[in-house]
Length: 461
Ligand SMILES: Nc1ncnc2c1ncn2[C@@H]1O[C@H](COP(=O)(O)OP(=O)(O)OP(=O)(O)O)[C@@H](O)[C@H]1O
Ligand SMILES: [Mg+2]
Picture 1: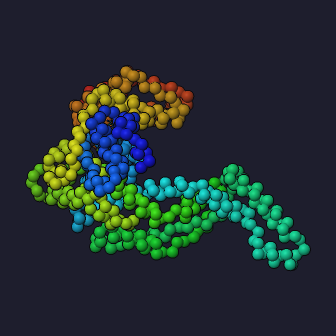
Picture 2: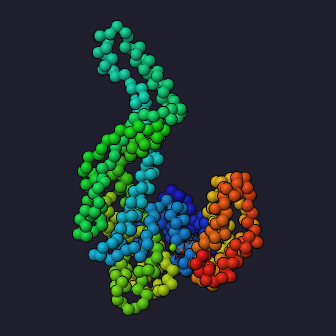
Picture 3: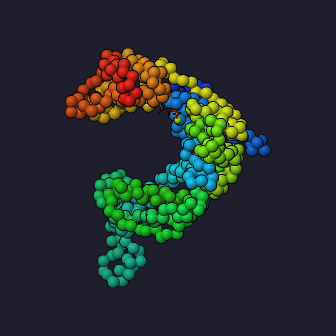
């Protein structure tokens, strides 16, 4: 919640702008929805429970940024977020994933989030005890009781031994902390959870949730095996840190907080929702089951309780964002009850040639930046001339309109075709410290032969 807490709708849009070109309507609406979650959390009294999220339906052709917006939103918000594909679900009672599993996913996500956060809080404490464990392995402390017995048997002063031991330990402690000994090998004991080989108990007799619970239960019942491993101190630090951190966090607290966060700030993104709409009104075959999935979705979107292995989760305040291309069907082909549960409709625009040029260049993770980084790892520099990029976006646009419109994904195919040879020739033919300049001519040369031959481009691009 921390991050969103301070983000205004404008700031959320600004953040999305770093990755997604255009689609301002969609960005604005998700930003408002996100901020409204926070606003609701600050409402007091009964009204807080009355305010329900305005679920969003994003409609737009393939490759225009629907899923991309969802992905960026997920990174942006500290809220539990899960993205599912509607086409993966089957109606309750049939073999396959039932729709409730999306809620379980969300809780799982939330648990991870809370766990990571709690672990961070105990990290320093855990690091200390890790260093102590390692120190005990390297220079075991002199046992007090034993030194008392020695006192009566030996002449040598036990205090002296103890002092030397403590001094050495002190010295090694600093060395461990500084990482000076990270390459040395030691034996550590690690716990291995024993849940292998259990697989699918119950077969088709059980629903998914009880199966997960059962697997979990059996996993917990099985004895945990201790295993000795020889690792470097550096590795040991990492391995032990994980287990020490887990020991320090209270899992019951994590579960409660996770459920609560998922209920109040969770976002479920249902992609490809058009794939479960009927389309043709024949009402036979798979359509029946698709409509079944839609019916199963209704209570979840409206608010119901779902049993998860971390506890019962209410979905009343979860924000749902659905997206679909709706090529073959229309939003009105969804069953009316479901349509009504997504009151906010946003249409994403088709991308223009100009958008393509920006997409190539501007996003933080743009294709040109990706390729530049890839090639730089071989110490080769690549520069894309402005007019070359224009040419690429023009080509991509033309191919989209002539063959099939796959949106910005076309840029990926065009770029890979363009750079294929170069990527192969590094490092043998194009050695380190070389500089490659992609010019407009090169783009034409590489792509004209293909774009001018329609049959060829259908296969290659
Ligand atoms: N508006 C945009 N700005 C920047 N990049 C984009 C944009 N639209 C699409 N892309 C690029 O195209 C790729 C595909 O886009 P995305 O996955 O969002 O498509 P989609 O709208 O979900 O399509 P589909 O309906 O086929 O699922 C993204 O990975 C991204 O690189
Ligand atoms: Mg998509």
